Amino acid sequence: MKKIMEIMKAWLKKRSVAIFLAQIGIYLMTSVTWCVVVYFTEHDPLVAAATARTNSVMFFLLLMVFMANFYVLVPYLYESKSKLRRYLFWVVEFLLIFLLNHAIFFPNDRAGIGTATHLHYYQFSIIWLVLNYVVAIAAISVRYFIRQSDLRKQLLEEKQRNAEAELAWLKNQLNPHFLFNTLNNISSLTQIDANEAQDAIGQLSDLLRYALYETQQKEVPLCGEIAFMENYIALMALRCDKNVKITTHFDAPDTVRTIPPMLFLSPIENAFKHGVSSGKPSFIDISLIEENGFLVFSCRNSNYPKDGCDRSGSGIGIENMRKRLELMYAKRYEMHQTVEQGIYKLRIKINVKK
Image (cartoon, rainbow, N blue to C red; front, side, top):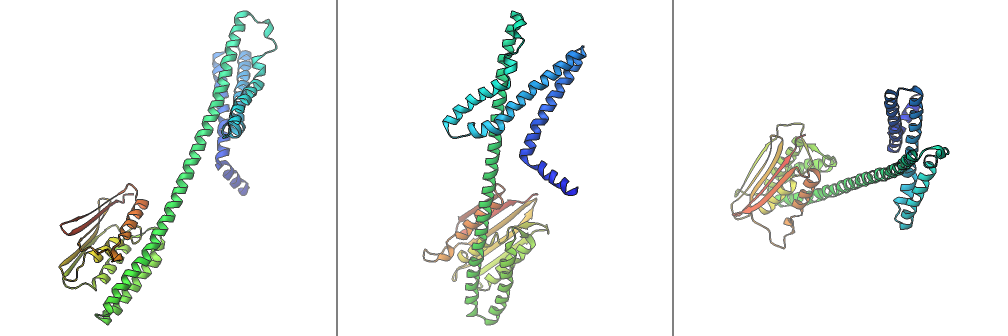
């Protein structure tokens, strides 16, 4: 019995079944309403019963016209790309209405009625014919809106699939990029201090564990992402000399907040690529705070751009970050970057309100 109930529930959830039941429901509701109106307006019970019966039959004929169009004529003739089928639709439509309503248009006892009644009957026949065509047009309109709804749903699903595929591709780009730059840093460090290089390898192991496993999720805890950035900055700072001043400020009191993994890695990488000079004073200032439902990331650094032969600063990472922001926070973020008086500034503000 339980299995039968589950099958019934699944059957009722199907949209085609729901539409069919809605059509039957509208017919029953209209018929019952008309019967109630006739019952209270007609004083003769026999006349009321006959009127209700007649109108129920007429409403049923309209229902047949609607269903014949909705399920057969419109999908197989009207919605066809063939012009011949569209012309054929209107011919078949006329024949359908004529055959279903033949008894109404040409009653058997019409000979005994008077001229005035005869004229009124023809007027009714014209109105009834127009009403049948209105029902047919209603079937066309309902089919059109259902088809448009299906198309919009398919487009949204396709867009979502493309967005997820692109996001996965962007995330896969980050890991090799991150590994390549970090290994270069450790390579440089081995020539300066072997012990620190060994410690750095341990740090790198922790960072890679995060990059390889945590980033498989769509979002990660913000506190874990902050710890990752702090470790990464500390590792990158090992190759900087005393002329480089590095300051950080991370303040995110919401412990359950989540964000896409390694979202702000690219600007941090670029800060060390383009913000550090071997012979000139340099600075890097990085902050990430949460205030009033907004997550604000800021990066300021001295600007020493690489020459055209150095591919390490090609800007691919920033563009990837922008795409990820667009995919995850469309119309919910602001991103501004400028270079003024030798200082690069980047500010990203994300609305993370639930």
